[in-house]
Length: 212
Image (cartoon, rainbow, N blue to C red; front, side):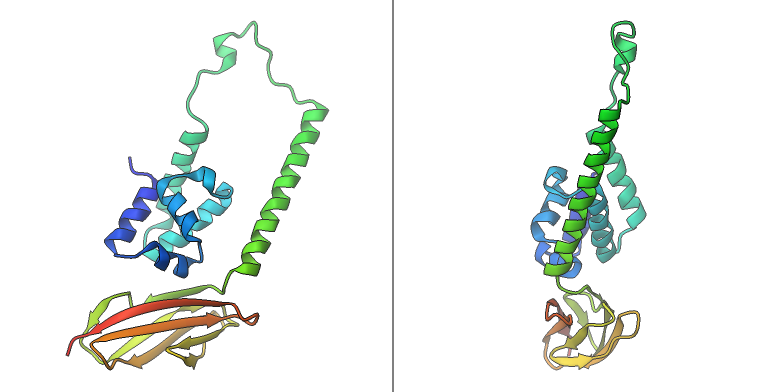
C-alpha cells in the first residue's frame, strides 16, 4: 500500500511541479518536503506539524486532505507501534505490571511541559522567519490559453501588500484577490508577490502560453 509521501510525490510529478515551487506555495522548506515524500519522519518535527504539512501540501495539489491524513495516521501507527505479544501474556507470573509512581507522574508532567515549550519555540520561529501566506488558485502553471485576458486569483493574509507584475492590487477582508491581466507575448511570466508589514515577502510565479 502506498505511503502518504508516495501519494504526494506522484501527484506532484503528474502535475509537473518541482519541490521549489511547492516550497514557495506552501512555505514548507524543501528539505522537509523531501523527508515527507520519502517517509523520513525522524527528520521532521512532531506529528502535529507533519499533519499540518500534509494538509497544506495536499490542498495545493487538490487532493483530499482527510484521506491523506488517514493514510498518514495508519502509516505512522504501524511504524511506531508494531503489533507484538504483550509481556503479560508471554510470562504473566514472572513479570510485574507497570505502576504509576509519584516520580513517574512528575517526570511525565515535566516532559510534557518541555515538549509544549519546544513546540511554542518552533511556532514562533516559523512566524518570525517565514514570509506571509500566499496561494495562487488561477492560473495553473504552464497553462495554454487563446484569450489575451486571463484572471489571476488566490488568497493571502488580509493585511499584506499584494502585487502582480509590479502592479499593486487589493485584497478583501478574507485575504482573497482576483485581477484580470492582459497577455502580450507567446510566453508570459506572471509574478505574484505578497509583502508583510515587516517587509518579508512570498513570491509565486506562473508561466502562461498564449496561442495566437
